[in-house]
Image 1: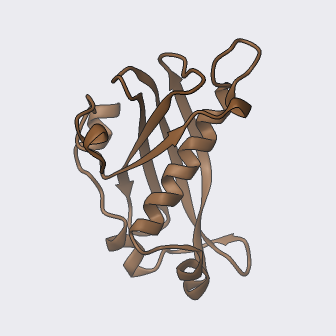
Image 2 (image 1 turned 30 degrees about the vertical axis):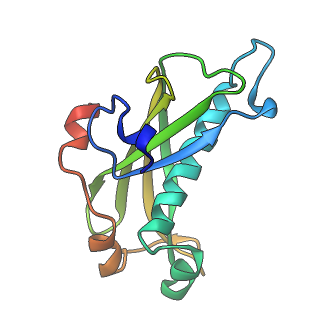
Length: 154
C-alpha cells in the first residue's frame, strides 16, 4: 500500500487497495464520475486483490472454478471529480468455505473524502459448466476473512 493510501481515514486497515485516476470518460453530464463507474472500480479492485492472493484466471482455469457476482450494493457519499486520484480498498468480509464469498469496499479521494462504500456477493462457479460448485479448499483458506469488516460496514 502506498504511503498516501496508508494514511487515509479507512474504516479499518484494508486488506488491499487499488489506486486509480479518474479518466475523462468517467465524467458524465453532471461533471462528476458517473455512478456505474464505481461498480467497475469495485470489480477491478476485487480482481486486483484476487490476483495479489495468487488467484488469477490461470489459477481459476486450473481448478475449473471461479467466482461470479450474485449481488452488488453501492452507497454513494460524495462525487469523484475529473483529475482526482481514487483509492479503492477491499476486504473479504465473509467466506463460507463452500459456495459464497462477500467483499466490502470503501472508496476515498486522495484528500480523504469518502466517495462511496460498496458490497459484492460472489458464488463459486464451475467454469466448464457455468454451474454453482463447492469452492476448492485453497479458496476457502486463500481468500482470508477480515472478521471485523462485516460489522464495520453493516
